[in-house]
Image (cartoon, rainbow, N blue to C red):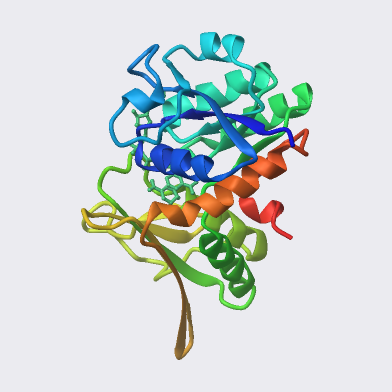
Length: 266
Ligand SMILES: NC(=O)C1=CN([C@@H]2O[C@H](COP(=O)(O)OP(=O)(O)OC[C@H]3O[C@@H](n4cnc5c(N)ncnc54)[C@H](O)[C@@H]3O)[C@@H](O)[C@H]2O)C=CC1
Ligand SMILES: O=C(O)C1=N[C@H](C(=O)O)C[C@H](O)C1
């Protein structure tokens, strides 16, 4: 059996290190290198608390992509570098599996067009947890019957982007189902700017950042005399790894960009 050769960008991060632990357990995956902004030339097994891989760390992505034979780049870094890594990997014919959130709509469109032009498979998933994917699908379904909705996302306080990628994706799925609707009182005024949250097509997103949280979201629908709350909690980053593996397997069969894990789930 030939193994899928994987590069991980962000190996020392909360998600990247969890991805290394997942790869270590999978016989059909091989870690061939890592991309970091530190520790050039070291091996992963020289760094504390990371699995015992002898994969080399590169700080320059072009050198990495030229030196190493790889099938897939798993990117779990920052919005700024995740975008550059993804674009460059596509140009090298290495299939990106991207968990990094915070890309703009323009960047997503540019990557979609580039993947199509180069015929390189890409999966960008704002949330790899299967429960979160279902939560988003259930929310889309509910929006058909409950057009008044607010999204409350809660994350750890090291998160760079707000709102979360999951909240943005949830809002865009809901948008596919409902007419634009400005919610609340038509003459509502914020006496403190930001009090009503961010606005997407008339619906509101509220972002909470606190120590102790991992990744949580509630989608609250309101109607006359009733509320429906659809809620998902990731308590541990292991929750994302089934989806990361699924994406690695599936990206090998793609020649376009797919945005959202729901598009590869059966
Ligand atoms: N799609 C999903 O299911 C999930 C996505 N995320 C996203 O994944 C990303 C990473 O999240 P965490 O692991 O929690 O963050 P983190 O801050 O723990 O890890 C980010 C890592 O990226 C590294 N990094 C920064 N610049 C780099 C560069 N130029 N080259 C290589 N590595 C670089 C940092 O050293 C750090 O180790 C975020 O965008 C987050 O929103 C997080 C959890 C789940
Ligand atoms: O930064 C995180 O932690 C997470 N980011 C993703 C997002 O922005 O939606 C996925 C998950 O919520 C955890």
